[in-house]
Length: 196
Image (cartoon, rainbow, N blue to C red; front, top):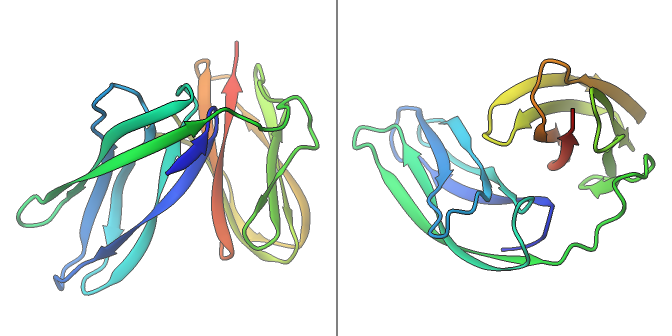
């Protein structure tokens, strides 16, 4: 896959559960060059006799431009303890992104949505802004870079228009955090930096 330095992106993995029982799966990085490029996915549920596509979040926040050969390891909590190792090549391009200081900067999402936060970087709190062209079920969740969920800002049906949600980080350590919006039209993740 191709990603710009300092950014995050999502790719989808396809799964088919041939068992009648639900199983859980997790994804982690097994990097041959010790770069942290994956936001881990933990305890994702796959229903019995179902096919599904699930997002995997790739982070190039700490990667310099270049080509990285690595592996994605998917572990299934099934009878056999199945582990699948997927060779992965990540092409990191030099970033051409907009200034993070611009509070009006947003990224267009699938289904004509917008997402952004300001200020970024921030010292104790920031505001996450989303704009919806039509009413939808919306979830906005914040994770640390180890994949641990630290906050759910909204999980509700929202009207069309612009919505803002404050994120307070007084109890959190400095570092990079990822926030993800999920709607029926699609999903996307962005990063923000807490500096104390």
